[in-house]
Amino acid sequence: MNLSIATIGISLLLGLMTILFIFRIVLTWYPQAELTKFPLSLVFFPTEPFLKPLRKIVAPLGGVDITPIILVGVCTLSREILVGQQGLITMTLNH
Image 1 (tube, rainbow, N blue to C red):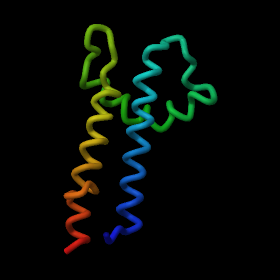
Image 2 (cartoon, one colour):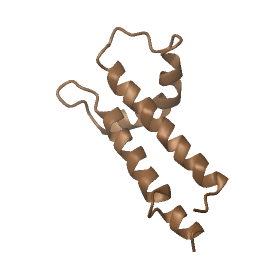
Image 3 (cartoon, rainbow, N blue to C red):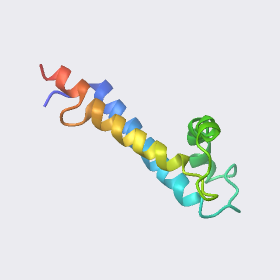
């Protein structure tokens, strides 16, 4: 299989973002957690620029912020579409 550095990088980046958004989902269970302090800041700062604008579009559902759940789906779907077994980049490199 012919994988480029870019393909591996995109896959790792989207995988890491998925994991960070999953951590954000867990952190919503602890509203008293101080997200701007270490070690939670390692999850907060990379994800907040994506969550903040989406919160303006998607209202909380029953008082629960569902934006991290949406972004887990977006990252997972993007990863599959771009670099999955039959992803756009993967298929382009194999031809």
